[in-house]
Length: 111
Image 1 (cartoon, rainbow, N blue to C red):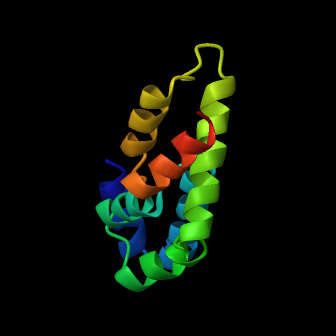
Image 2: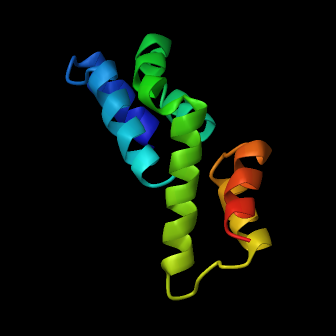
């Protein structure tokens, strides 16, 4: 549905793909998604490839990815129904799109 609405807004000239991609990428990154998952979401709503690439630039590095995974895992551990055990944290991070290498670093850090 969001794709249809965005397509209509773009057709009318109301949407700037770069601004939309940057805003959405930032929100998804804050919510603890990996760059690959962010890319998939941006592409799913049919934003132009140049806008997607520009929006991903701050979130693509291995250091940024690891920091985001650590923050996201830590937030999950603090929740009332915590996902404290390493296997559950690993599965949760995998669903967010993080690579096995990043997940291993995060889970190993907290074992």
